[in-house]
Structures are given as structure tokens and as C-alpha cells.
Image (tube, rainbow, N blue to C red; front, side, top):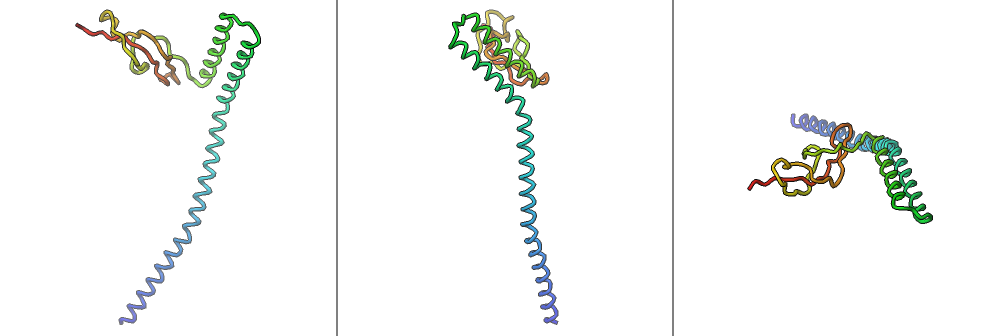
Length: 163
């Protein structure tokens, strides 16, 4: 009887060894398939990102060309302050156009501080209570994307301190 149990146990161990060996043999195949899939997905991702970025990069290159053209004019011509200001306005308009094509627009000017659209970086003492939380100065203009705050406006606000 002991011989039968030993033989049965030996058969079971042999069967388990076959299962383990089969699983181990499958592992490199799975690993290779996973590696191929990962490489393929990375290629798709890089291609997708390249296609998404391309219009923005072309717009930035166009803006670069414009600034180079103005720099060359500054060197070769006597430009007045008014002409220089006009040139900067053209560059600003071009930048805003690049942003607009990506659904990014400047925030409309506001008088009252709104934490959803503004970030107070400094406070000035208000002269009266009615000036509390009013915007004293815009330091960096805020932008919206798809109607939501994309970059909050950096502002200085008035704060009223009751005596």
C-alpha cells in the first residue's frame, strides 16, 4: 500500500512539475508580447503628441520669425518709440491669436476680487470699507480655456481693516 501511495505522490509531483514548467515557459512569451505591445503604444503616443503639438509649434515659429523681423528692423532702421510700440502690439496680437486658436482667451477686466479667477499676491490697505476686496492692480493677466479659469489673474487687492 505504501508503494501505491508513493507512486501516486510521485505522479502528482511530476504533474505539478509539468504545470510549473509549462507556466514558466509561457512567461517569456507573455513578457515578449507585453514588451511589443508597450513599444507599439509608445509609438502611437509619440506620434499622437507630435501631431497635437505641431500646429502650436508652427505658430510659435511664426511668432519667432516676426520677432526676428522686428529685431532686424531695429538694427537697420531708426525706429521711433511709437513704431516700436506698434511692433510690440503686433507681437501681442499674434500671441493672443495663437492662444485663441487653442480656445484660450484673456479674462475680462474685473473690479472685485474673485478667488475662482484671481490670485491675490499682495494687499493694500483700503481707504474705506467699500473698497474692501476690490482689485487695486493686475500684475499678470488671467486666461480662460473653454470658459473656465486656465490661469488665474495675479492681482493686488484692497483690504479694509476696521479700527
